Length: 114
Image (cartoon, one colour):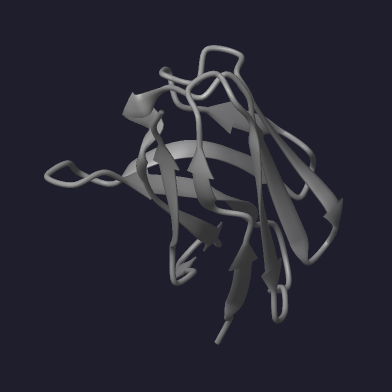
């Protein structure tokens, strides 16, 4: 079983920046991806960004070059979010995806508001 410690959410003004961090308790054998999803009130959960063990990255269409995902080490994944919009307000979840299982963090609130 994998657990996560998430940090870095909070309140930010439109146009501002935040960095989300996630540290996993362990990593599985073999290839996997770590990343971030988000869920706004009344909406489905959507993929924000992911990065594989080989360094391949993927972003949601709405990111449009504003966010950067990175892995400081094998257990951690960071998400730098720039030029935040009110539409980015959501609960952000850390995720680890193996071939057969998905693991989720507890979520952290990001609120973009003036």
